[in-house]
Image (cartoon, rainbow, N blue to C red; front, side, top):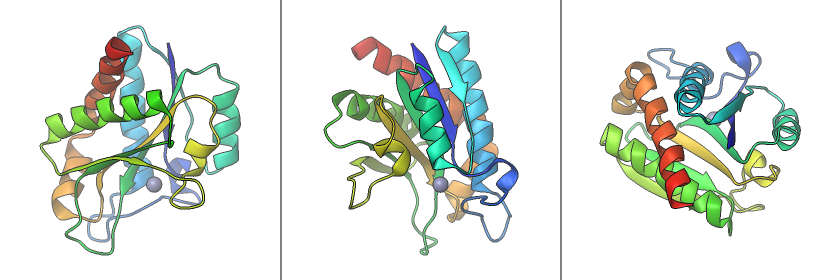
Length: 181
Ligand SMILES: [Zn+2]
């Protein structure tokens, strides 16, 4: 089994750091990369092969993933909202993808269990409506995890302090999925 990991946004935030917490300066691109690298090492430790790419080019990400031989694709992001009260975790999958939905559910549940945060659920990213490029343009079952809201004080501290726990939860979600699939 091989998992392609895509930490969201551009390496070193150039040109796109993703969402940034205005008070602390915590950047989505940095959280996503740290979590993605840790997911890779947790998965490698249990015999799951990984490949990781963070890139500003969504096209490059999908091309690389599609030629990588990966069985599953996981994109890692932080959420953000105008309302500072919005918080919690949600995971997107492609509509109608049975394995995508199952994998999303396993990862979502492990993060909720580990973080005791608000469960915003597994959601379908519907092309033309709320579609997500990396989910729509990857060949294998693909999910996009919104770890927590970088714009919320409580979630921001989780994203700053609990990167390793987020990563372990994602890796456990993958191994849970291996068992049920
Ligand atoms: Zn993002």
